[in-house]
Image (tube, rainbow, N blue to C red; front, side, top):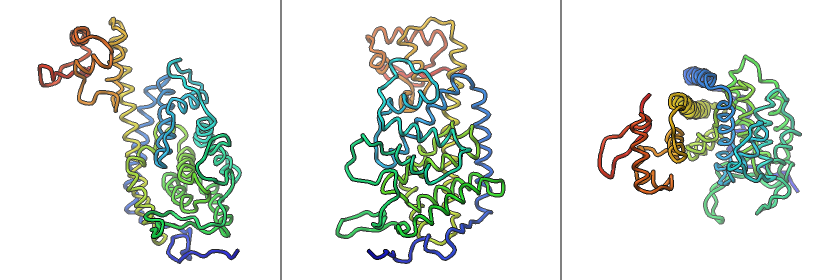
Length: 380
């Protein structure tokens, strides 16, 4: 079989590949803001401490795994992944929150923990192949055959869309006959570039772009790329990486992610726009993490203030849902009808419980009245 040579249109075919360059005047302001937000996040997290800090770490790592798979269109059993992670973190879950794990969830947990807990271990081809094996355990059914724990074969590796008879090629990775050399060069760079002369966040962005461009596996390239990005971020700061999930922000802007990748992979070696997108997305990630930490702090202050009050189990359930916020937190407040449904109580009991929480100062009424009256956690 003759070596396949793709058309000369991809970034890795440039004569100076991979000598990346960028406009420092555009990148530096975003870098400063990102480092500032990282510092704020660490400061807020430090004020949480203890079991809540462990819970925040578990939630962030769980979110990273779930959303990284969701980017590829794969849904996971959240409870099973959570149980696999909790065991590795030494966190004891309540019985009702413990789920049966699988080789799939165990492998995903191993991959995540190796990336964020072992930043000092040098990167190697063997480590990447082990990650690939964790991503695709032997006993998990697969719709297509892939080389597990091996680099891809001689077939062209293309990202395509459109009709089968008229596909649009968005990107084509380096052919197999030069992949070993290209991957070895990346690994050497990764192990040698972790020093002060290169900003660690820029290094993480380059890591992501370079590896996804090589696309060395039949499948799983995106998830391993994001794990490598987490490893680079853990090398930058082993504490903060456990508090945020960049994959969640990538998932929220998935179309932009693929757009900027395609644009950068068909351009020259100037990756300014990619760095800007990466830092903007990382900043969004940090802001999401700060919201979560602030909710944790609010929840702690709330229960410190009201720990002596007698609440029913139903009241505690609703209060915790309101304090947790997010999709399950009754955005816009909770109504009596919602209380009745979620707490599984009668209409009269729901009204009585809400009145009691108002009198204790836990809740406050939002503007409006009658059947549309809604309640939220009182300012304290």
